[in-house]
Image 1: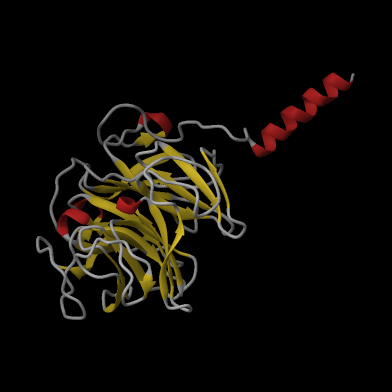
Image 2 (image 1 turned 120 degrees about the horizontal axis):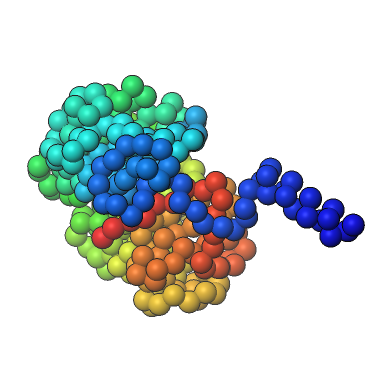
Length: 313
């Protein structure tokens, strides 16, 4: 009788909460292409950054397909913006009439506006809820490092996040900096020294990055950066006025431990759930978890209802 009751309770638990600590295919299959549809009927080419809007829709950057896909909570995937035949370019417009060139990462603000680092075009693009695409910063086809002017130049912008105040924070691996602009594209400030890859801790004006790949803002004054080349997670603290090493020994291995004794191997993407950080440790082939407030460190975690990004070099 007890075994029967336990079985019934188990079935009820899984029917309500689902399978815990399991991995399943939500959308797409092993076919490399641009196919719209539901669940595993659709296909992607090189899915990169992911973000979720207020309605539970997931927006996905397909790097080599040069488009942004929308996936509903039911798993139906369509091309939301950019070419549905993988054509590249730099054209503003609505839906499939807009063109991207190697879009890389994505972030969504509280009004469900979407911001995309268009890496191949060296620009930052904005997509409103109707699918209208505009270029808010950078000049298509021009890479560089012009600060504060109009226009502002980028060099292969990569990671992006939205601050609570609406500004955008952007990681630029090629320029070795983290930059902040407004959501209309106006320049605000820069952290790190352009072209300096020493990856040294220091003040906001003297600290440097080696290879900043992604960035996560947990407040208007506190940002965490995956420093891919130095195998560390760096912290920008505007209150303390510092750029410091938050986690990682700098050794290119996959070793668990406390914040500074643990090691990463090519950390690329970073997410935060309000308590813990999750890092795609690219060359270590793992997803790492940091409980940043106690210094505990774990690896190879399974997540439920949590969107992570898979980044390319």
